[in-house]
Image (cartoon, rainbow, N blue to C red; front, side, top):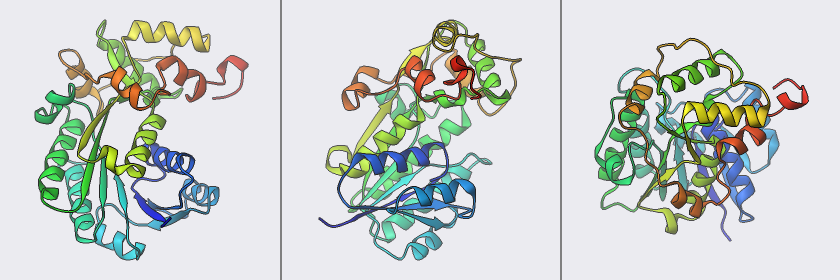
Length: 296
Protein backbone atom coordinates (compact mmCIF):
# COMPACT_ATOMS: atom_id res chain seq x y z
CA UNK A 1 0.00 0.00 0.00
CA UNK A 2 1.36 3.40 -1.00
CA UNK A 3 2.21 5.86 1.74
CA UNK A 4 -0.25 8.75 2.06
CA UNK A 5 1.17 12.16 2.88
CA UNK A 6 -0.85 14.71 4.82
CA UNK A 7 -0.03 18.36 5.46
CA UNK A 8 -1.34 19.55 8.84
CA UNK A 9 -1.47 23.31 9.30
CA UNK A 10 -1.09 24.55 12.88
CA UNK A 11 0.42 21.25 13.96
CA UNK A 12 1.44 22.51 17.42
CA UNK A 13 -1.84 24.31 18.06
CA UNK A 14 -5.03 23.08 19.69
CA UNK A 15 -6.71 21.68 16.60
CA UNK A 16 -3.67 20.78 14.53
CA UNK A 17 -2.02 18.75 17.27
CA UNK A 18 -5.29 16.90 17.79
CA UNK A 19 -5.37 16.04 14.09
CA UNK A 20 -1.81 14.72 14.20
CA UNK A 21 -2.57 12.59 17.25
CA UNK A 22 -5.75 11.21 15.72
CA UNK A 23 -4.05 10.38 12.42
CA UNK A 24 -1.29 8.48 14.17
CA UNK A 25 -3.71 6.45 16.27
CA UNK A 26 -6.39 5.89 13.62
CA UNK A 27 -4.65 3.78 11.03
CA UNK A 28 -2.20 0.98 10.46
CA UNK A 29 -1.81 2.12 6.86
CA UNK A 30 1.48 3.82 5.97
CA UNK A 31 1.23 7.59 6.36
CA UNK A 32 3.57 10.56 6.51
CA UNK A 33 2.58 13.74 8.33
CA UNK A 34 4.07 17.06 7.30
CA UNK A 35 3.60 19.06 10.48
CA UNK A 36 3.63 22.72 9.52
CA UNK A 37 5.06 25.00 12.19
CA UNK A 38 6.42 28.53 12.19
CA UNK A 39 9.12 27.58 14.71
CA UNK A 40 10.48 24.03 14.41
CA UNK A 41 12.86 24.70 17.32
CA UNK A 42 10.05 25.28 19.83
CA UNK A 43 9.50 22.77 22.62
CA UNK A 44 6.09 21.83 21.26
CA UNK A 45 7.46 21.23 17.78
CA UNK A 46 10.41 19.20 19.02
CA UNK A 47 8.18 17.12 21.27
CA UNK A 48 5.86 16.46 18.35
CA UNK A 49 8.70 15.44 16.04
CA UNK A 50 10.19 13.04 18.57
CA UNK A 51 6.85 11.38 19.30
CA UNK A 52 6.63 9.36 16.08
CA UNK A 53 8.91 8.74 13.07
CA UNK A 54 5.99 9.32 10.72
CA UNK A 55 6.06 13.02 11.59
CA UNK A 56 8.26 15.42 9.66
CA UNK A 57 8.41 19.02 10.84
CA UNK A 58 7.86 21.44 8.00
CA UNK A 59 9.00 25.00 8.75
CA UNK A 60 6.68 27.51 7.15
CA UNK A 61 4.07 30.21 7.42
CA UNK A 62 0.48 29.66 6.23
CA UNK A 63 0.60 33.09 4.58
CA UNK A 64 3.35 31.85 2.22
CA UNK A 65 1.84 28.64 0.79
CA UNK A 66 4.11 28.31 -2.25
CA UNK A 67 7.13 28.19 0.05
CA UNK A 68 5.40 25.45 2.05
CA UNK A 69 4.96 23.23 -0.99
CA UNK A 70 8.51 23.92 -2.14
CA UNK A 71 9.85 22.92 1.26
CA UNK A 72 7.69 19.79 1.30
CA UNK A 73 9.15 18.69 -2.03
CA UNK A 74 6.80 15.71 -2.21
CA UNK A 75 3.28 15.02 -3.48
CA UNK A 76 0.66 15.74 -0.82
CA UNK A 77 -2.55 13.70 -0.69
CA UNK A 78 -4.50 15.68 1.87
CA UNK A 79 -4.35 19.05 3.62
CA UNK A 80 -5.85 19.98 6.96
CA UNK A 81 -6.34 23.73 7.15
CA UNK A 82 -7.03 25.77 10.27
CA UNK A 83 -6.82 29.55 10.19
CA UNK A 84 -5.36 31.83 12.86
CA UNK A 85 -7.18 34.88 14.23
CA UNK A 86 -5.88 38.17 12.92
CA UNK A 87 -6.91 41.53 11.46
CA UNK A 88 -9.93 41.72 9.19
CA UNK A 89 -9.38 39.55 6.13
CA UNK A 90 -6.40 37.68 7.58
CA UNK A 91 -8.12 34.32 7.97
CA UNK A 92 -9.56 34.48 4.47
CA UNK A 93 -6.14 35.31 3.02
CA UNK A 94 -4.48 32.41 4.85
CA UNK A 95 -7.00 29.84 3.66
CA UNK A 96 -7.44 31.16 0.13
CA UNK A 97 -3.70 31.12 -0.53
CA UNK A 98 -3.43 27.56 0.71
CA UNK A 99 -6.45 26.48 -1.35
CA UNK A 100 -4.89 27.97 -4.49
CA UNK A 101 -1.51 26.35 -3.83
CA UNK A 102 -3.14 23.00 -3.07
CA UNK A 103 -4.95 23.10 -6.40
CA UNK A 104 -1.76 24.05 -8.21
CA UNK A 105 0.23 21.23 -6.63
CA UNK A 106 -2.26 18.41 -7.17
CA UNK A 107 -3.59 17.92 -3.64
CA UNK A 108 -6.42 15.39 -3.73
CA UNK A 109 -8.41 16.39 -0.65
CA UNK A 110 -8.65 19.66 1.29
CA UNK A 111 -10.15 19.54 4.79
CA UNK A 112 -11.06 22.95 6.20
CA UNK A 113 -12.10 23.41 9.82
CA UNK A 114 -14.76 26.09 9.92
CA UNK A 115 -17.58 26.65 12.45
CA UNK A 116 -21.25 25.82 12.75
CA UNK A 117 -23.54 28.80 12.30
CA UNK A 118 -26.96 27.36 13.08
CA UNK A 119 -27.16 23.86 11.62
CA UNK A 120 -26.47 22.44 8.18
CA UNK A 121 -28.88 24.55 6.14
CA UNK A 122 -28.45 27.87 7.96
CA UNK A 123 -24.66 27.54 8.03
CA UNK A 124 -24.52 27.48 4.24
CA UNK A 125 -25.89 31.02 3.95
CA UNK A 126 -25.27 32.73 7.30
CA UNK A 127 -21.94 34.37 8.23
CA UNK A 128 -23.13 35.49 11.76
CA UNK A 129 -22.12 38.78 13.48
CA UNK A 130 -19.03 37.16 15.05
CA UNK A 131 -16.03 38.16 12.90
CA UNK A 132 -13.98 35.01 13.52
CA UNK A 133 -16.96 32.86 12.51
CA UNK A 134 -17.99 35.01 9.54
CA UNK A 135 -14.47 34.76 8.11
CA UNK A 136 -14.81 30.98 7.99
CA UNK A 137 -18.08 31.30 6.09
CA UNK A 138 -16.24 33.36 3.48
CA UNK A 139 -13.57 30.66 3.19
CA UNK A 140 -16.21 27.96 2.74
CA UNK A 141 -17.69 29.83 -0.21
CA UNK A 142 -14.24 30.32 -1.76
CA UNK A 143 -13.31 26.65 -1.31
CA UNK A 144 -16.47 25.41 -3.00
CA UNK A 145 -16.17 27.84 -5.90
CA UNK A 146 -12.45 27.30 -6.56
CA UNK A 147 -12.66 23.51 -6.50
CA UNK A 148 -15.75 23.24 -8.70
CA UNK A 149 -14.82 21.20 -11.76
CA UNK A 150 -11.36 20.31 -10.42
CA UNK A 151 -9.88 17.06 -9.17
CA UNK A 152 -9.48 18.34 -5.60
CA UNK A 153 -12.19 17.18 -3.22
CA UNK A 154 -13.12 19.09 -0.08
CA UNK A 155 -14.58 18.48 3.35
CA UNK A 156 -15.74 21.23 5.69
CA UNK A 157 -15.79 20.57 9.41
CA UNK A 158 -18.13 22.75 11.47
CA UNK A 159 -17.30 22.48 15.17
CA UNK A 160 -18.88 24.60 17.87
CA UNK A 161 -17.32 26.36 20.89
CA UNK A 162 -14.35 24.51 22.35
CA UNK A 163 -14.65 23.07 25.83
CA UNK A 164 -10.90 23.66 25.86
CA UNK A 165 -11.50 27.41 26.25
CA UNK A 166 -12.44 26.64 29.84
CA UNK A 167 -9.06 26.58 31.57
CA UNK A 168 -7.87 27.13 35.16
CA UNK A 169 -6.18 30.43 34.26
CA UNK A 170 -7.63 33.92 33.92
CA UNK A 171 -8.51 33.45 30.25
CA UNK A 172 -10.60 30.41 31.15
CA UNK A 173 -12.35 32.33 33.92
CA UNK A 174 -13.16 35.07 31.44
CA UNK A 175 -14.63 32.50 29.07
CA UNK A 176 -16.83 31.21 31.90
CA UNK A 177 -17.93 34.77 32.67
CA UNK A 178 -19.06 35.33 29.09
CA UNK A 179 -20.91 32.00 29.19
CA UNK A 180 -22.68 33.24 32.32
CA UNK A 181 -23.89 36.31 30.41
CA UNK A 182 -25.94 34.11 28.06
CA UNK A 183 -28.16 33.08 30.98
CA UNK A 184 -30.50 30.12 30.51
CA UNK A 185 -29.78 29.57 26.82
CA UNK A 186 -27.89 26.39 26.11
CA UNK A 187 -24.63 26.50 24.20
CA UNK A 188 -23.20 23.62 22.21
CA UNK A 189 -19.61 22.70 23.04
CA UNK A 190 -17.02 20.24 21.75
CA UNK A 191 -13.65 18.86 22.81
CA UNK A 192 -10.86 19.92 20.45
CA UNK A 193 -9.47 16.39 20.48
CA UNK A 194 -12.73 15.18 18.94
CA UNK A 195 -12.37 17.65 16.08
CA UNK A 196 -9.02 15.99 15.43
CA UNK A 197 -10.73 12.62 15.17
CA UNK A 198 -13.21 13.90 12.59
CA UNK A 199 -10.41 15.51 10.59
CA UNK A 200 -8.41 12.28 10.61
CA UNK A 201 -11.46 10.32 9.50
CA UNK A 202 -11.99 12.75 6.62
CA UNK A 203 -8.36 12.56 5.50
CA UNK A 204 -8.17 8.78 5.75
CA UNK A 205 -11.62 8.10 4.28
CA UNK A 206 -12.03 10.76 1.58
CA UNK A 207 -14.66 8.81 -0.34
CA UNK A 208 -16.96 8.93 2.70
CA UNK A 209 -16.39 12.58 3.56
CA UNK A 210 -15.73 14.42 0.29
CA UNK A 211 -18.25 17.13 -0.55
CA UNK A 212 -19.69 17.10 2.97
CA UNK A 213 -20.10 19.73 5.66
CA UNK A 214 -19.91 17.97 9.02
CA UNK A 215 -21.23 19.55 12.22
CA UNK A 216 -19.35 18.55 15.37
CA UNK A 217 -20.66 19.01 18.93
CA UNK A 218 -20.49 16.78 21.98
CA UNK A 219 -22.84 18.49 24.43
CA UNK A 220 -25.34 21.29 24.88
CA UNK A 221 -25.84 23.03 28.23
CA UNK A 222 -26.36 26.42 29.80
CA UNK A 223 -24.10 28.04 32.36
CA UNK A 224 -26.05 26.74 35.35
CA UNK A 225 -25.97 23.19 34.02
CA UNK A 226 -22.26 23.52 33.27
CA UNK A 227 -21.61 24.69 36.83
CA UNK A 228 -23.54 21.76 38.25
CA UNK A 229 -21.62 19.28 36.11
CA UNK A 230 -18.32 20.96 36.99
CA UNK A 231 -19.05 20.69 40.73
CA UNK A 232 -20.14 17.06 40.31
CA UNK A 233 -17.01 16.02 38.40
CA UNK A 234 -14.29 18.27 39.81
CA UNK A 235 -15.65 18.77 43.32
CA UNK A 236 -15.29 22.56 43.44
CA UNK A 237 -17.14 25.52 41.98
CA UNK A 238 -16.38 26.43 38.38
CA UNK A 239 -14.00 29.42 38.49
CA UNK A 240 -15.16 32.63 36.89
CA UNK A 241 -14.41 36.35 37.00
CA UNK A 242 -15.80 39.63 35.71
CA UNK A 243 -16.96 39.68 32.11
CA UNK A 244 -14.35 41.00 29.71
CA UNK A 245 -14.81 42.28 26.18
CA UNK A 246 -12.62 40.12 23.97
CA UNK A 247 -12.74 38.44 20.60
CA UNK A 248 -15.44 36.05 21.82
CA UNK A 249 -17.84 38.83 22.89
CA UNK A 250 -19.65 39.08 19.55
CA UNK A 251 -20.00 35.32 19.50
CA UNK A 252 -21.61 35.22 22.93
CA UNK A 253 -23.97 38.05 21.97
CA UNK A 254 -24.97 35.94 18.95
CA UNK A 255 -25.68 33.04 21.31
CA UNK A 256 -28.33 35.15 23.04
CA UNK A 257 -30.53 35.25 19.95
CA UNK A 258 -29.39 32.41 17.69
CA UNK A 259 -26.37 30.16 18.18
CA UNK A 260 -25.25 26.72 17.12
CA UNK A 261 -27.55 23.94 15.99
CA UNK A 262 -25.42 20.88 15.29
CA UNK A 263 -27.31 17.59 15.16
CA UNK A 264 -25.47 15.97 18.08
CA UNK A 265 -27.02 12.49 17.65
CA UNK A 266 -25.87 12.53 14.01
CA UNK A 267 -22.35 13.54 15.07
CA UNK A 268 -22.30 10.70 17.58
CA UNK A 269 -23.33 8.25 14.90
CA UNK A 270 -20.17 9.27 13.05
CA UNK A 271 -18.09 9.00 16.23
CA UNK A 272 -19.83 7.38 19.22
CA UNK A 273 -16.98 8.35 21.59
CA UNK A 274 -17.67 12.08 21.27
CA UNK A 275 -17.04 13.55 24.71
CA UNK A 276 -19.79 15.28 26.63
CA UNK A 277 -18.85 18.07 29.05
CA UNK A 278 -18.52 15.78 32.06
CA UNK A 279 -16.32 13.29 30.23
CA UNK A 280 -14.10 16.07 28.95
CA UNK A 281 -13.72 17.53 32.45
CA UNK A 282 -12.73 14.16 33.84
CA UNK A 283 -10.46 12.90 31.07
CA UNK A 284 -9.14 15.80 29.02
CA UNK A 285 -9.45 19.15 30.78
CA UNK A 286 -6.92 21.13 32.77
CA UNK A 287 -9.09 20.50 35.83
CA UNK A 288 -8.88 16.71 35.73
CA UNK A 289 -6.31 16.39 38.52
CA UNK A 290 -7.95 18.78 40.99
CA UNK A 291 -9.85 16.02 42.77
CA UNK A 292 -6.58 14.34 43.68
CA UNK A 293 -4.92 17.55 44.76
CA UNK A 294 -2.47 17.62 41.84
CA UNK A 295 -1.77 20.79 39.94
CA UNK A 296 -3.72 21.05 36.70
